[in-house]
Amino acid sequence: MIGILGGSGLYEIDGLEIIEERRLQTPFGEPSDAYIVADYKGKRAVFLPRHGKGHKYPPHLINYRANIWGFRKLGVKKILSVSAVGGINPLLRAGDFVLSDQFLDFTKVRPVTFYEGVYTIHDDEDTNEDLVKEYITGDRVVHIDVTQPFCPVMRNTLRNILEEEGIRYHFKGTYATTEGPRLETAAEIKALSRLGADIVGMTLVPEIVLARELSMHFASINVITNLAAGISEDRLTSDEVIQMMKEKNEEIKKVIIKFIDNLPDKFDCSCENVLEGAAI
Image 1: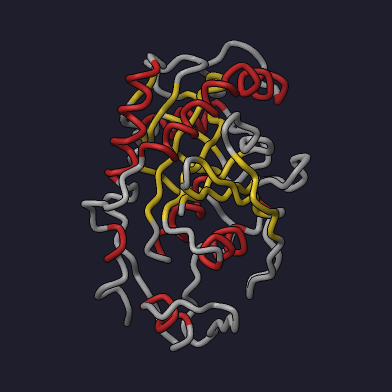
Image 2: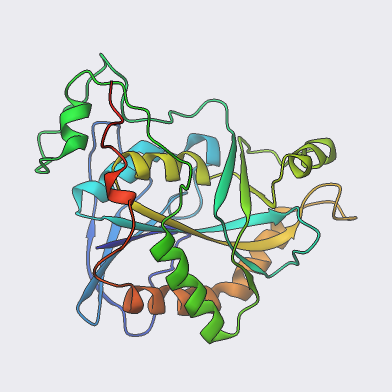
């Protein structure tokens, strides 16, 4: 089953049948909103607006652990993240799609792991019998490998779809995650550029880290909504972000529906083995 993390209304796609809305409780609190369970040609997908409907949670207050744990409870093994980002690399233009392959983490106050050693977690509704359950209930400290954090199978599937649709995209890109909710200074963007960042946003971390801690496959498709501070000559506003995402909305939905349809049943990758040998 596939999970889709993004804005509200991404599930409003022709041919997609809404099965139910599920509100969940997790050991980490309530997720951002109800999960929308849908069917397309016999394949199930679960949608969750990370900011909640109406965009009520700023990036630093999103309950990331509840969101990702809720996907686990619903049986989701693969997550596709859809995000709006600022462009740092001069080769990028507003409206481009970027399939990030690396990230830099500059967040400050967010819980970034499920595994907190002696602070064990118990979820009586979790029916999984796996290393996640063994570690999270067993006082284990876990250090996962994130050398290659994104699922190669999902990234290649997305690349093929973007090629078929003729959408301008970039197959690689380092996503710098900042705390927000303020935008970055020109000096910060200059520093991020020197560190190798191509795009900047506020939500990828800890989403990808938490998903990987649960042995999930994860890919991120990012839309350049504007150029970052100091690169753009204009004052940055939320209005331009909203406008660009509206303009790209139909393309995003087309990519999502083809992604659900074309994702292979079997994956030739190591994402699900990340917990092996990771616990102390």
